[in-house]
Length: 302
Image (cartoon, rainbow, N blue to C red; front, side, top):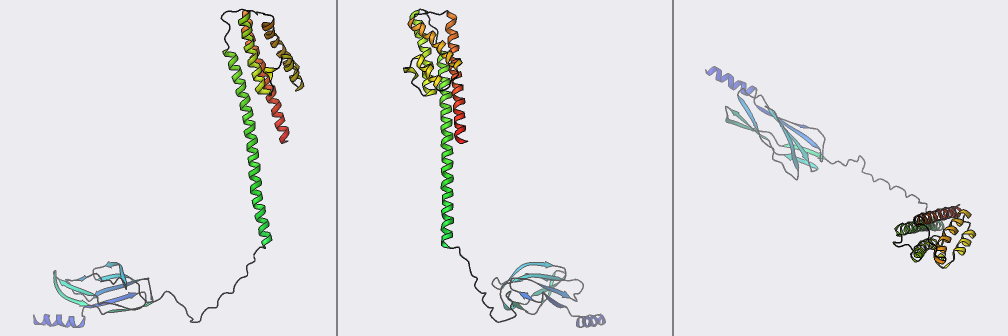
């Protein structure tokens, strides 16, 4: 028994338990990550090393992460100061059968931290020469500015003129279409006389004639309500209306004149037919007038 004990003491003296500390990389710069590995060597069977967290100093270094193995621990540090940094000794406890056996500590770790700003020469760099800037003359700047403003004003004027013409054409077209629809509607809604006699017949045809003349007022810009049927026909001849359409106007006006001055009473079916003739008449005048104005507009822009 004494022999075994002496052998054990001899082995302990020949192979002592030791801590090994490795630091990488060799060149350490501010802000870079370094690895400090602490490993236990010559550990005996049944002994378990217990490693602890490394106490960090926030103003000097920060422990970012750690990696633990059965016999070692690796600390990942980020250094924040330049110069000589001292890491305190790192303790490791050795336990046997869950009982504390002993504690060993590493030596203090000294790190030389370099700055990221490296310059092999202490000489000051020469100042770069000033570059000449070629400025455009004041006359050219003024001319370009004037052309730019003139272009904006001219574009605005052209756009406004075009918009005004389009709006005017749209207004004229809408006005005439509404005048046609209004006249046609009034003719269609004109009721036949309940009692047909010379007086009711005269009133009926006077209303038809008045509706037609009001349409002429708005469509041809004439005072048709103050003109005789012959004067209206002469005006249509002067502005180039087709003779067939003028004759239709004369015929339909003659029926109204006969009812007014000759107390003529047409057959009952003629009342309805004459309403249709008035509608066809003002529709034909509208088509001719619209075609004429369309040609005039295109000739102006040609």
